[in-house]
Length: 321
Ligand code: DGY
Image (cartoon, rainbow, N blue to C red; front, side):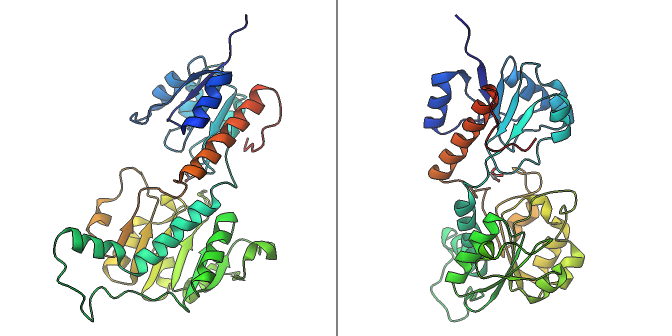
């Protein structure tokens, strides 16, 4: 009897997805406590035909060089794939797949949570309560920015940006966006295209980042870009941490050039720049963008669809390399 192929995971997946894999393959579930090094990724993938992975694992050239010859596919349970060196994977003949399209609503919801929470001092208010320091409602206490009638500038108008635009409109915001080029009107969700980034920054009361992390977008929001923003603007990042230059952003938050920030993603996460903890105008959540049961189930199932297709010699639904 032929042995079933081994499928390894780096992290635990929601149960129906793990059960589905275990029903067809020799499944090695992942470990949520592990801090992955290239050597540990290689050990996890030992003898496996497929590795279900996530953005928390280093899959750079060094790690890919160490992967076993048995490995045919790296199926990341994420839309982002900047943690994988695609050229190195291609050179080793390893397919790479991702899970786009199923996390747009969940991520857009977190962007709105941060827009509302950061502009309305929600974190600061909660800290006050938890510290037992709330003395009662006062006419000048914890005054935020009302978003009704304000302008939201979206940088990166893909599916998530579009879902954010739809939601922001329902809150009475006017919405504009910047992209390298104008998107299909159906994707615009009533938002206005602004060809120059500096113009979008100058017009927007709230700026929300939805661009992918690439060499071109790394450090996109730096001191020069912040200087182009409205005084007292709010910045939201649910994309990837390195889209912003932490030094420049923290300086601007301290000086109140930026009135507030809402962050879901961080450079070097889970270790984040500790200066953020000291800022009363920062609302911080731990990479919750896609963290609903429904969305994580859909992502895991798509990752399984992808890897099954590769192992069966079919074209995977979402190849990235
Ligand atoms: C993604 O899918 O890229 C999200 O950031 C969750 O990891």
